[in-house]
Every structure is written in C-alpha cells, then in structure tokens.
Length: 489
Image 1 (cartoon, rainbow, N blue to C red):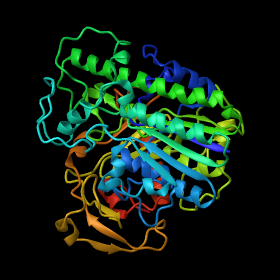
Image 2: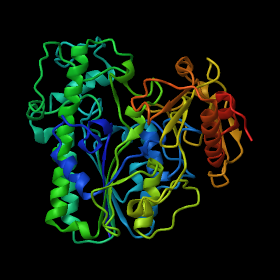
Image 3: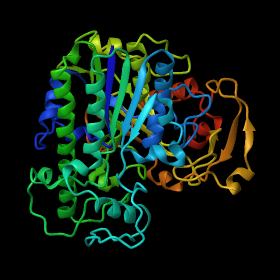
Image 4: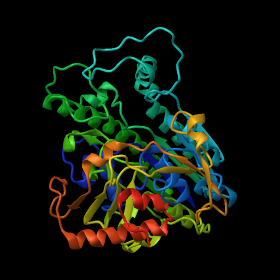
C-alpha cells in the first residue's frame, strides 16, 4: 500500500468546479472529483501555515495552547510514526516556512526531503543591488520579503523554472522511481496558489479581462482599499495561478493512471486554508475572523480499500483527521493523544466522526461549527488577556523568542498531551484587533455568504456548550475561557 498527499497552500474551495464554480479553467480538478470522495464539510483547525502543519503531524489542535512554532518534543508526528513502522516517508515542498525558525523541526521527521527554492520571499538569491520592480498598486516599501521576491522572480524565466513546476517534477520523479515498491508515503506540497499570484503568461491568457491599472498580484493583509477593477483583476490573477496548479495536479493523475496505482494507492488532495479575495471587504487571512472563504476548505480522498469515487460526503471533518487516516491506512496504531479520527468509514459510508469542530488562531476568535451554524467567540476585553504561549520550543515565525519575553516565563505543570512534561508559560502580547469584531453567529443554511449575523439565545447556548466541551477535551488553558468570557467546568 502507498499514499500520496498533494497539498496546496491557500486553495479556495469556492473557486473549484466541484464546489460550484463555473468560470475557472480546471479540467483536472473536475477529473479529480470524479475519481475521489469529495468532502462538503471540511474545515481548518489551527491557522495559518505551520500551525496547520503541526495538526497534519500530530492530529490535534495547535491554536489553543500556542502560536506559530516548531513541533514540540512531546508531539506525535505522523510521518515519523510511519517511518518507525516500516513506511518510507518523503517530503517534496517549495514551502519556505519549513526552513525558518518557526518550522525547523517538521521536515526532519521524514526519511528524506527535497526543498525547492524561490517562492514568495524565500531568502534564496543573494543580490546587493535593488531589483527592477514594476509600479505597484499597493504602496509598500521595497524591503524584506517583497524585495527578495522580486529578486527571486528575476531568475524565473520559463515555466519549468517556477518553484511549483520544479516541486511537482521532483514528486513525479519519486513516484516513477518507486511505483513498484510498497509501503511509502509521499507528501507533495506546493506553496501555490498562495500569494503572490505569479503565474506564467499561458495561464493568465485563460482569463482575459479589461484592466489598465498598475501591476497588482499581491494583496495586502488589510481592509480592501482598492477599486472594484483592481479587486476583479486580483481574482483573475489568483485563477491563473490556480489553473497552473490544475495542470500539475493532472500530471499526478496521469502517472497514477499510467502506472495503475489506483488499486493500492491512497490519494489525498487538500489545503491548509483558503483566502479572502475582497469578500467581507477584506484581503487575505489572520487579521479578521475566519469566514468560510478561509475556514471552509476543499478536500478530496481516494481510498482503494473502499473504492468510493464521484460521491459527496457530508460528515464534518478537519485537518486533524488526516494523520489518523494515514496511520490507519498503513495499519499503524493511532496514538492516544491524537484527537482527530480516521476517515476510513467516512469515506466508505459517510460515517460521522464528530458533532462539532473548533478552529481559530492563537489569541483570535475561538470558532465552533456543527456544519450548519458557525459561532465565532471573540475576546471579552480589548486587551485580549490573559494569554500565554505554552511551549518547549520558544520560536516565532522567523525569529526566536526575545530575552525580554523569556524573563517572565514560568514552568507550567504538564497538560494531558505533553507526555508528563512541564512546559514553559510565556506571556503573549496578544492582539487587540480581534475584539472590535465582537462575537458572531451565522446560519450557513440561510446565509451561506455570512453576510447577516443572527441573534438566537437557544442556538448560542448550544454552540457555546459544544465549544466548551471541545475545549475541555483538548485541555485548553483556563485562561482561554477567561479571555473569551466563558465558564470553565
């Protein structure tokens, strides 16, 4: 038995034909939906990139205890467990966050890995002089990540030079070389269609539209201040990159066809989260509540054991379910600390694995959905306190915790999942911006675009009860209840 995960970053559910979009050119995503079980109720857990990947490894939420950071010494790691049980694991990725301080312990859990350089602001090409940059729609200084991105782009001349193309080629090389071998797992992961939405001209030609503005393919993490023309343009730029993703997805499907791999190979096509392209008057993610455009994700799974294809699944599933699903596929025991569930029976018969799900970002809203309602519980006070990081790996996204942050740390007794290990309790600065949005309740059946929050005390009590029950199960710190104004049982 073998398994392939094709993981895209920032894959928007609402832009895919399997989820109702009729204007994007995605023949291979259409083909994928015919060959797999398509999940209609898939949600994120912890946001954004590396928190989601910690869930992919550990099968449990990250965001209640810690922000962005590495795997912890007490964490269960799905690829590492597979490796220990005789399953060869290989990672191919152009996701540069794996090689920053806050992602440094993930790639080494695999037997082998291949890192493709050049995405976004990856510190790849050294160049002292400033790059040549087209005039920008969004006025931002040419520094840091944005400066480096333009240097990287100058070395991408042909489609074969794009990091996504090189990533898929590396993954396809692995598949071709090992198609006749048994018991391996490939995680083929591309940063696309994450911003900046930079795609070859051949894909951009699929979406002709009138636009006479300046260069604009990288929306800021802010409220929309651009014109309607610019918003429409950025959606076409995203679609162009999505069509490039579709092309390379098709190459994976082709090799599975050519090598007759559908009989013994699981295929998972997934993402870490979506993206706001002007909806709710916002760009991007993480600086506003997680509306469905970000939190409600696409998911496709082929399991050769059941052979289910072209069917929809309505059960509520999350990122934390993928680790136990893969362990179960290879007949490996699922650790007790994994709170996700194997989706074997969900794929086969749409068997439910949970009544409700939590999702969020550390220090932001704690959100709960039962598939119909989404309850977004905001911080009770403007200072968003109390809030701490609980970790033994004190690193942020691109830097270590400062000595000032560490001066006030305490040693906190073990949580239920830390294998008897105490952890560092380090004060988090928090973020006051989430308080301004307040607490919101949406009925997705009546209001799928989440434009009209409702007030219903009975439903809110039920969603609050589901939220607190899940927080209890995950041994959330007491302060999380205090921060949200919830009772702790």
